[in-house]
Length: 208
Ligand code: B12
Image (cartoon, rainbow, N blue to C red; front, side, top):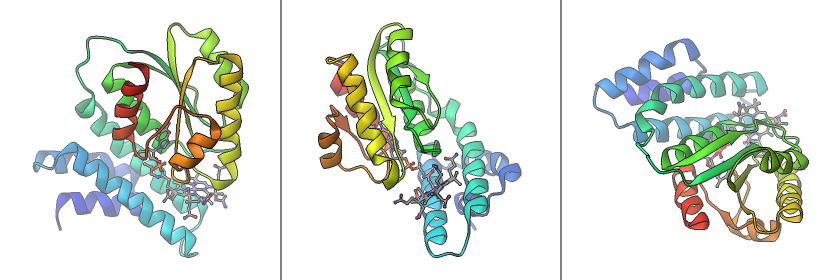
């Protein structure tokens, strides 16, 4: 079995104590950080499918998420870019009612390595907290909102509209598995991206 396949299985089975060593071994074996990350993201889809099929339950999803986060920690310093010029501050959070943070954390990692100073508001962030963060931090040029549940999509819209009502010129991007470009437009967002890599491209395009 390849090292990358071992990593996938460790994520799927939530082996957070073993994952850091396995990710390091995959890197040492010559696997690229991006390929290891893609493999771990694919594992989370497997976990989601098993949940949908009733084969696993919330605790198993949670331990898989913990394992993935530990694996990402190993990749973070490798994937971090060498940026000298700041593009400004971006405040990011997962919207109210939503506790999913892996995607948000990956977007933060990619935006940081593209030159944004990131302010992480965490999960379950009420719309008003995005506004407060824009007021409280220097040089905020972008707000990024993540939502993973169909039931929290209205909270995404509320976050965008609350930020826009307080700061009409503030740029806002949205994303998360259930979000589509059409829904992003309906929210009044300035941009949408399907993954962390394209989120960084979109964010730079929007603020430039
Ligand atoms: C792990 C997980 C959990 C963990 C989360 C732990 C954590 N620390 O995040 C826990 C166990 C807490 C959890 C709980 C629940 N979950 Co859950 N969960 C998942 C799972 C398996 C993986 C999510 C994940 O991390 N994916 C990997 C990351 C990398 O992908 P991502 O989040 O989509 O992010 C990428 C893009 O979307 C994008 N992106 C994300 N945010 C943003 C923001 C911007 C601005 C941009 C541009 C881009 C962007 O870039 C990211 C990186 O490439 C998914 C299944 C799945 N296929 O996604 C279900 C899933 C999302 N969960 C689901 C459900 C139903 C629940 C619960 C309601 C279960 C329950 N009965 O309690 C609860 C809800 C809790 C709550 N209030 O939030 C459903 C949602 C169904 C739906 N359509 O709404 C899913 C799809 C599972 C399923 N197949 O049924 N879950």
